[in-house]
Image (cartoon, rainbow, N blue to C red; front, side, top):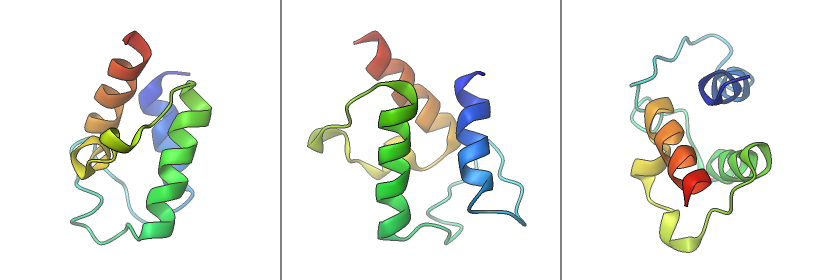
Length: 78
């Protein structure tokens, strides 16, 4: 399963009634609280075998599906 599909599947558990586009800002849409943000970080680490470091905790890395894909790909290739 590709990165996009895995992230979409994870997000769909939380946003059941809202279809999120790859470029939708999930923070601006009001879907994200601090607990969900930590769950998202832990999901990305576990699912894709990456380590999210303190310097990576920038909203721009997690704002959209597109930005999360880019972040994961960058971490995997580092």
